[in-house]
Amino acid sequence: MTSPVARSRALFDLLTHKSRPLLLSAAGPFPLATTFQQHRWSSHSPIGSPTLTRKKITLNTLRTLYQKSEPITMITAHDFPSAHVADHAGMDMILVGDSLAMVALGMEDTSEVLMEEMLLHCRSVARATKGAFTVGDLPMGSYEVAPEQAVESAIRMIKQGRVQSVKLEGGREMAPTIDRIVQAGIPVLAHIGLTPQRQNALGGFRVQGKTTASAVKLLDDALAVQDAGAFAVVLEAVPAEVAALVTKKLRIPTIGIGAGNGCSGQVLVQVDMAGNFPPGRFLPKFVKKYGDVWGESMRAIQLYKDEVKSRAYPDVEHTYPMPAEELKEFETLIRERPQ
View 1 (tube, rainbow, N blue to C red):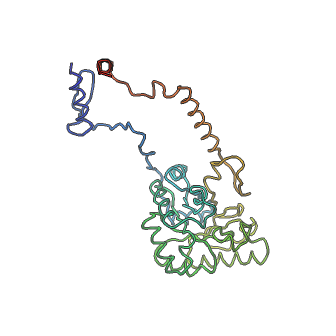
View 2: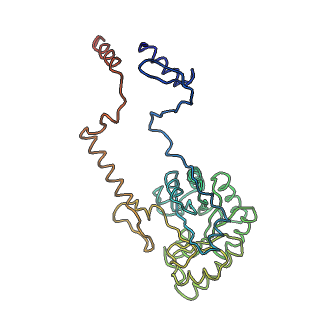
View 3: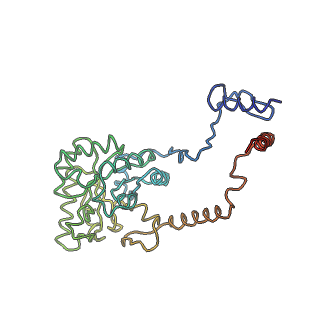
């Protein structure tokens, strides 16, 4: 039988890669013929493998879905965990929306979020997303000044944010900007109807296209962004009938959010649809709550708190054992150590 010192030295050599992989047993350390499987003892471990078996969604995939009249699914994500679950759930598209200003950063509205903050969240989402087609929202102030500014911002989104396309708000007036970005080789998802970045000019978060004149403007905007090269267009807070008619007039997909069932696809903010918010929070009419992440998280955290207070946690199964002879030796040393 090997001594405790010899076993400790063998373990040290193993963990510091100073020897071949070893199999540790009560009898002693033995070399392993196969690769040693590393065990992580720290809580700072990866959230999980983002590997997926499905094929990567591309623009061609989205076009095929549109041509088959199969609805396109899109959801927002703002970090690795939210993108990780959305990708594994099989979403076609994942949008790093500027709504993260409110749902992830606690800001009052989307106009406050900065380009650098969007890039950080885009990178986090991109690391988790291996199947879905990713879109990064260009934040307010990063594209409106001139097409050249917009191209520079879009390039940063692709190179630094690691997403596959960008989204920007605006209709006919943004067509030249969309055209320049597309000419630079970057896909653009347009966004018309209720455009949150322009809420002050719209008089707040108000439904668009409710009058004949505003419905005609919506159609003109949709045709303009289509002709400029947008691969799809988001229709937000638009009467369902109007959205359906606009969709039929276009050659590109429409992604609805509060625009009825006649669009080519749908998008929701993940925090909203998953129920990851406290009771009493205002939700737009179009949001359907599919889960109760807040309630489940509260239940789990409160149970954890109660078990810590009662010392029910951690139990024996959650602790690391020490060999009895080592513990006995340690206890002897403690007793003999002067106070």
